[in-house]
Length: 328
Image (tube, rainbow, N blue to C red; front, side):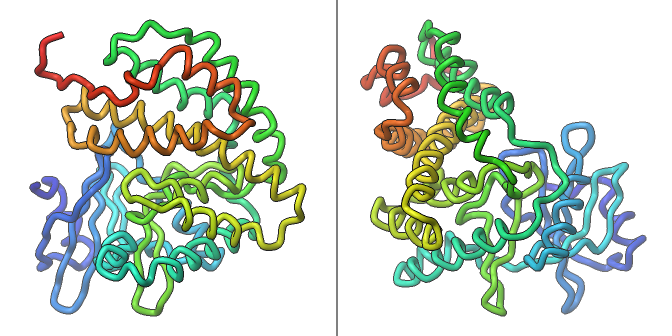
């Protein structure tokens, strides 16, 4: 992975002309990242090439989070025309890898991550668009747009959308007041910092919406197994200050948003495979189906559970998706 052609000029303009660049693992977008080393100085170069990417939302939300007392990367320099941003380097200690090597820390670290969300939900929400029903529905439809065609399923899209509208309306009604939703809060986007705090990443798609969304994003992680027991303990920890009725409603919304998110991710991971050739994402689909089926057991999901039972039977859910180069 080579740095963008404009990187050398950009870094030279901002006092990093002698720096050495090395690639850093990225995400599923067009963004790329490089570690920048200049003696004892470290930074991260984000390459967010227009028109595919726009770094301005990342910068705006990073500044909001820092102003609110959370650890988002500081912005050292920016060139919005070329999509280059020089960021504070949070190091290599991700929550994911730390727990792989230190599973005994799991409860404490997840509890700290839940406490961070509790704190974020206590501060005024950022000035962002709402996570409204239309957005939830667009995301859920990624399943019918991408996954179902790969399985050659002729599904009832109209009743799919109607079911989601029915179960999502109470969630949307409860988003008052809304909280900031980072939308990708999980073990691969949380950095463990030297001071014992957490550094936040990958929040450029943030909206304002329901507090259960980021919680379920972390506790029903698409890339890391979280046991049912740990999920239950951390959900109970988040709800420590909630009354019985309030907690019951929250758990219902948590299951609905978990199902919506997992439905969306099945669609996204299928799209990454069939459209973009990133077939490694298919490895996550068995976990996504397990998570979705767990959420579908909640009574609040009945209209959508019935749709899945009618349209995507169990044997299909666990059938591999044909690879791009496979004949029909």
